[in-house]
Length: 497
Image 1 (cartoon, one colour):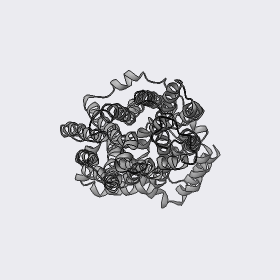
Image 2: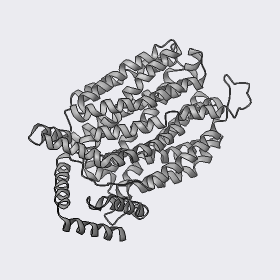
Image 3: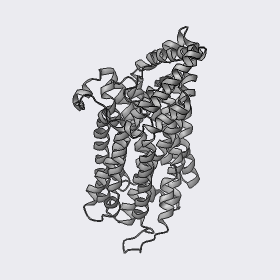
Image 4: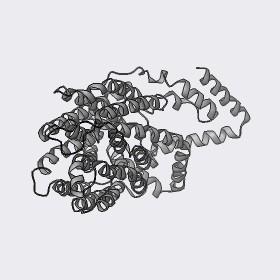
């Protein structure tokens, strides 16, 4: 537990902040406790209902990633069909990332107010319509319009998936379940790579076939979600709203926002760094393999599969380790090792590139594996889907131009054409290496100064009781000069420690 959270709420805000900053390094040290839980024993803690909620959230997040990366993997082919440059096509990626925050707000509020189930189903239905629509576009403007709408649909799914999968999860299994959930992103990328190879260069409709195929699996996800109800945590929230405690519950939601606004700001800044880290290392990498290194379609497919296998492995392992060593320390160590791997990842040109991409993505997605539970533990139950989704997607908004930035700067480093060149070649590897070095450093610094609520209570009814008790304490102290003095002395004592 972060020492910042142990400071009494009545202690002066300045003293709380000073204490928080003074303990950022010391709080990284893992506290005394049991050894890391056997991962299989941790997974066995989940009951049937918890596994079903995790599974449906995992499949939806996986297909969200698939839908996103279909553009990254087919950018060269879409550019030829629509008679524009690859850089112009990357604006389709940028638009998706920019508008995700709109979807996060709309569907986050809906999920917290109306339930996790129906906003989730509507999201998946939009995936079907817009994937089909992308496959039928005839002009560049149509392409941008459909992808803009897709950004809104994609933005709504992450917060809902995190809440659905994690809010009922046993404490000792949170880290590994968080890592598994987040790696739906890498698995979606892996599926996109595999089906891109199966459809894009082997069918008469080319890249369009990949998008049409992508509209199919969300139908199965919708059916799966229709068979499930609401999570126990959300049902407890609805129970509070339906009883005489409804007014008090609304006060709790307002109090949560009032006391957590600075945490939301921190999470948005952190998620900006994380999204720069993932999009900066992934979105343009297939283009680098195809255009700069001129790898064959088969070799490029194998390289990206290896990268995503590394991502999945890293996310699960580091997510689980974070249960013992802490969320922040796990992120920082993963970023430091990732920074050391930038050179071989960006500049190796022989078969050693396989090991480089495996371990670089192991560290990138290893850090990401901590994110779902880290965000969930820092978010109050009454606003969990909203805060997790909005923080994540505003971070996406901040990083939305990452692939366009890399492609634009890469154009300043032209490479000579070869006999097999079909498009202009640029040194994307150099640009991506510099970019990733800056991003890793940024994430490390932001994480060091952040809070941590590992093992935080996530059940809404118990949080409600805790906040009510804190409100009573503050009301009593505010009217008693002797108690005010006592708590000020406690604050001074905490600061001295």
